[in-house]
Each structure stands twice: as C-alpha cells, then as structure tokens.
Image 1 (cartoon, rainbow over the protein chains, first blue to last red):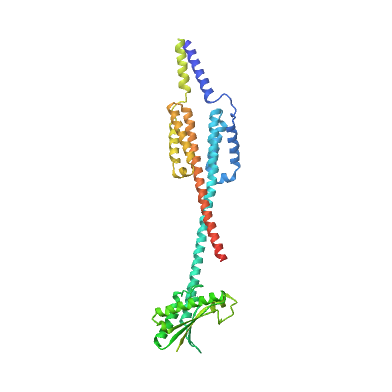
Image 2 (cartoon, rainbow over the protein chains, first blue to last red; image 1 turned 135 degrees about the vertical axis):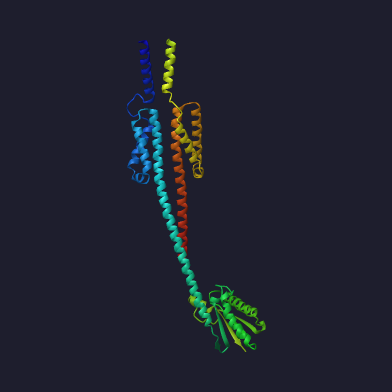
Length: 264
Length: 119
C-alpha cells in the first residue's frame, strides 16, 4: 500500500513538474513585444501580393512557423518562434526583392545588348558611307585631266586632298601627283609653277602663310618623286582669285586649292 | 526511507525534465548553415554579420559543453535562420551593385549617342 502511494506521488510530481516547465500553465497565447510585432509583420506579409507572387515558398514557410506560434503556450518557445518568424518574413521580403533585381538585370542586359547592336549597325553604316565616298573619289581621280589655260597646262589639287585645315597631303593625293610627275618626266624641257590659294577666313598674313605651306608640301612631293627642284616655282597667293564667293563652307573649301601649271 | 524518497524524487524530476538529449540534427544543421554562409559573396557584402553569426556558433559550443541542450536547440535554430537571412541580404546587395553597374553602362551608351547626334 505504501509503495503504491509512493509511485502515485512520484508520477503526479513528474507530470506536474514537467508540464509546468514545458507547456506553460497559461492556455492563452503568451504576449511579448517580439511576439506581437512578428504577428503584425506576418499579417502584412499575407497581404503583400508582390511577396506572395515572387517568394511563395518563403511565404509558405513563414506561414508554417506562424501556425506553430499560434498554438504555442510557452513564452520562451513563443519568443523563439517569433524570432524565427521575423527572420523568415525578412527572407521572404529579400527573396521578392532579389527576384525584382534579377528581372531588372536581365532587362538591362537586353537593353545594353540591343544598344550595342545598334551601335555596330551605325558603325557599319558609317563604314559603308566612307567606302562609297572613297569609291566616288577614286572615280573622280581617274577622271582628272589636265586643262589647257593661257598660263599653260593646269592640274588642280583640291582641298580634300589635304588634311583638314593643314598643309599635309593625304595619301590619296599621290595619284594626282603621279599624273603630274609622269607628265613632267615625259616632258623634261617643261617647268612647273605651283600657285596655292586659301579662303578668306583668316587674316591675310595667315592665309598667305597657309597657302605657302600647302604649295611647299606639293613641291616636296614632286621633288620626292624625282623632279628637279630647279624646275619648280612656288607662288603663295593667299585669299586672292577666289573661284567662288567665300560665303559658305562648301565654297571656301573649293577656294582652298593648289593649281599646278606646266609651263615652257 | 525519507532520504531515499527525496533522492528518488530528485532523480525522477531531473531525468524527466532536463531537456533532454543533445539536439544533434539542429546542431549539425547549424554547422552546415555556417559553412554555407562563409562564402565569397557574404564575406564581401556582410562581413560583420558573418562574424556575429560565428560568435553565436561559439556560444552554441559553450551551451553544448554545459549540457544546456534546450537553449542549444533554440540557438542552433536561430543560427540556421540567421544564416539564411544573411545569405539573402548579401545576394540582394550583390544584385543591387550589378544592376547599378548595368544602369551606368546604359546611361553612358545613351549619353555617348546623344553627344554623337549633337556633333
């Protein structure tokens, strides 16, 4: 009898002791700042369509933790679950943000690729234009003819055979120079007069100097091709004798020229 | 007899309630979570938080040594949650940087195009 009472007492104590510790005595959901703020945040999360769409599995996990929290009566455990719930809510929020950023990144990469294609197209177009320009210039060069004038046979080197606003001849001018050189070599008794002109955009002294530099440039090329320098005479004309009124860039360009006369 | 009864009561109480055994799976999950967090992206964008997480893991070790298994279990679960959050944070920061870089590239391209059109 005494032993039975002893077992009964022990059993009761065990049950009382453990349930008091593990399950809590209060049957209501325990309350703390942590718990109530986690619950509020979860309610918000449930209403957030963006998160429901872009982070569904994370939102679902938060829901599972919330269910556990709802049925928990022990304050410590409930606080712990509230911590886990908040953490999971933040994971869900960040996952939705990550999805948004990932989509944005893809969209930007597409746009950049598109822009690069457009850029390449523009470059290609420019190259084609340049190619066409060179082809038409080639045709022009092939058609260069010497013209007879009272001063003698005249060859003209236009502004476009020089670097822009400089006296340096472009490689392409070699074909005009070659024609003149061929002619002079086959007529060793003839001499050359180089008359160089500018437009009127600078001061007179600048224009004179500019035309002199271009004339010298042509003379150097002729000498380099084997023409005796004693056969060459240079005249820097500055802005004199414009072919056209200097009232547009196109006309000014036409006025900037070097005329080469083959004389007796 | 009374002394025996008191000892027995104490043993029953202790063995019944001192939670209880080592939470092996939570601990190993926490360990795995720490290993996953210790990556290049997290080290680059969330170094301080990673240090804090490692401190928590040290605390977990102490709790285990002291056989405070219930607290250890909670802490191990917190470590897993923190680790997941940390990795997400770092990943979002990395994405933000990538997006910013691409936005700047696009801006540069557009500005260059406008300048070319002006010319």
